[in-house]
Each structure stands twice: as structure tokens, then as C-alpha cells.
Length: 414
Ligand SMILES: Cc1cc2nc3c(=O)[nH]c(=O)nc-3n(C[C@H](O)[C@H](O)[C@H](O)COP(=O)(O)OP(=O)(O)OC[C@H]3O[C@@H](n4cnc5c(N)ncnc54)[C@H](O)[C@@H]3O)c2cc1C
Image 1: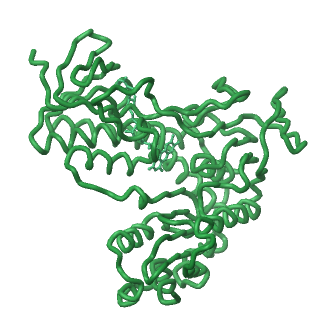
Image 2: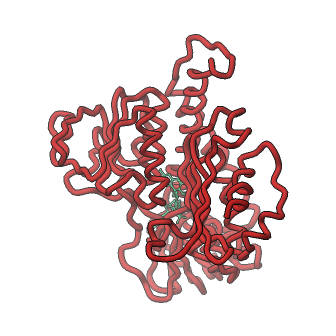
Image 3: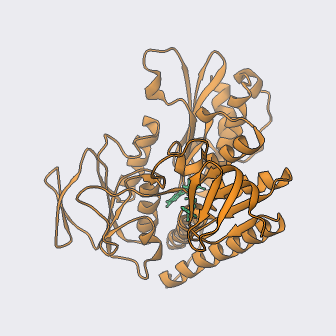
């Protein structure tokens, strides 16, 4: 067997499989090692499964509140087993498609744990085979971070992996950490009617977001009766009761510990490229994919313009500079309330805002809490990246009725 390759990749997530596709399209001979599932965390334990369960929870919540649309529905109930089955079917379908595409691209996939020996050699730990590669990319991803005193026991203290496979919904849940994973799961549980509490050590929920986004999500959580405590930690757990640093005691049937993710890299080896979550920079699938394109095809991208999205109703999305980082600087701020948009009233989704920050007639940041925020943000990223003057954007014709009219209204007000 010929064990010589142009490119050896470890990890079949978005970073790894994107590298494989780009390299094979350039005629390179590629080998990819994956020890678990092609598609990585994104497809099997992250983006796709959570958004599938989130959608089920949103449909349930909408059906329960459908009278406001002039509809009557009775006996609506959750069959959580089927919610999980649907999630599994979506994952399997996408995985099959991906595997087929990799096969068609003539990428050699080895389903085994690999070990990097040096910058040109990879060992298949199962067969012991050694592969010679002109270049090696490590795209081994990341795993849930353990928090001291709250180590996963996979029964009561759950990770974001464990929570995907619950067989029944709990009556109550405590979520520790209010990053994207914590905020999305809080909404999933709340939509399904589970008593939900979020505990965050920082000053505000979603601490990495613009302060207006954090405040709005706090307001939304209050309205939905999702309990939360900020500037708070868990001091002790006894018999399912969490004793908090603020003196509160909360009973939880289960706890989701969502305290970030750490790279699956023990020691970096010189001459090997580390990309995606394994690089420990920005842990998002679209960042991993852009890094792959940059690495293989030398297509650059701006790391300061990587969009962030938190899914739910409404969606939350942002890019660029946050208002709290502009202290002492001159800047313009334009905020449009979603409730000013006709489309929002038709959809019954009037909660939120579109906030645009600019300097010298150029957009420098956008912070959106709005239905379809994830898609709206793409339009603004194009404008920022291409330094399109705000005045020029006012010449663009946005369709009606849409949420994108909010972008038009915001730039018009600058
Ligand atoms: C609950 C959750 C929700 C998320 N939602 C979003 C979202 O909505 N949008 C978004 O952009 N990002 C989201 N993410 C983050 C996203 O999943 C990651 O950023 C993305 O998967 C990173 O891709 P990657 O290829 O770097 O790593 P991974 O997807 O982690 O893939 C790494 C792969 O390497 C394999 N591997 C590791 N070591 C070895 C070895 N020694 N040999 C062989 N194979 C190995 C692993 O089995 C894994 O399949 C979410 C993450 C989680 C946990």
C-alpha cells in the first residue's frame, strides 16, 4: 500500500473535512483520520443537534401560544423520544451526505485514532500503520471544560454531550454558564415547560456580547420566567440542592455545566498546522471552515469580523466592535426597535433591536436581537468588510416587509 500523501488531516469536523475538500479540489492526495464520527462536534454533538432540538421546542411553544394567530389547538404534548429521534435522523442524513461527498472527492478516510509522530508522520494507533505526509493539519477539536467542584458525573452533572441524549425531559434544570450553549439550552428547556435556572459568574448574561444584548436577553428571560443569577457561583451541592454564593438554594433534577471548551491538544508539534477548535482561538464552525480555506488555498479572512450567533427566539447575532469597548472614543450609534417593523408584527416577533455602531461614515459593529438575526448579520458583515460608506448603504433598496428593513432604517438614522 502506498502510504505517501500530500496532506494528512487528523479530525473529521468542519475544520478537517473542509481542508480535505479544498485540498482534494486542488488535486492533492489526502488522508483524513477520524476516531468517532465524520462531521465532528458540529454535526454530531453541537450546532446541528442542538438546533434541531431547539426547533422542536419552538414549534411546541408556538403551538401552545397559537391563539394569538387566531388558531385553536388542543391536547398539544411533547414526545421527547421522538424529538431526539428526529434529531438523530437529521444528523445521520447529513453525515451520510458528507461521507459520500468525501468519498466522491477521493479522500482516504481512516476511522481510527491518529497520533502525530512528527511534522511529516502520522500513526494509526489501531493498525500501527505509519503514513508519510508532506503536510499535516491537526483539527482535533475541543471538549467540554470541567469546572472544579462541578466535575461531570454524566448523571446529575451533565456536559453539553450528555444533555443531547436525555430520554425524558426533566422537571427542573440548572444551567451553569450563560455563553451560547447555556442560553440556547435555557430556551429549549423553557419552551418545553421545564423549570429553568441559569447561573452566571460574570456581571451579565452572555458576557461576551454587547452590553445592550446582555440586558435584552436578561429582560427576555425575566418575561419568560427563566430564573437567572449573575455574579453568582455554586458553592456546594447536596442531594440535588445547589447552594449558591448569594445564599440561594435551588433544587435541580439535572445540571448542565456549560463552562466553555478546551482544545484536544496535549502538546503542539513544530511544523504542524493547528486549526479550528483545537487551535483554541474562536471556537465556531464557520471560523474553522474559514481557517481551512486560508490554510489550504491562502484565501485570507478578517478574524475581527467573525460573526457570533446565539439561536433561539429571537435570534442574537453580532459582529465587530461592542459599545462597551468604545469608551472615550467618538462614535455614532443607531438603534431600530424590531417593533417598528411590519414583518415583526405579522410574525408575532416584535421583541428586539438592530443596533449599528459607526465611525467616520463606516460601520464598525452591529448587534442584533431579532428573528432571522443570523441571516441579517451577513449583509452587515459584507458592508463592514468592504468598507461600504453608510451613505452608500442608504442607496440600497431593501425588500418589504422584511426584517432587513431594520438595517435600512438604522443606516438612514446615522
Ligand atoms: C452544544 C454546541 C453547540 C454549538 N453550536 C454552534 C453553532 O451554532 N455555530 C457554530 O459555529 N459553532 C457551534 N458550536 C461549535 C462548533 O461545534 C465547533 O466550533 C466546531 O465543531 C469546530 O470544528 P473542528 O473541526 O475544529 O472540531 P470538531 O468539530 O470538534 O471535530 C474534531 C474531530 O476530531 C476528532 N478527533 C479528535 N482527536 C482525534 C484523533 N487523535 N484521531 C482521530 N480523530 C480525532 C474528533 O472525534 C472530532 O470528530 C457548538 C458546539 C457545541 C458543543
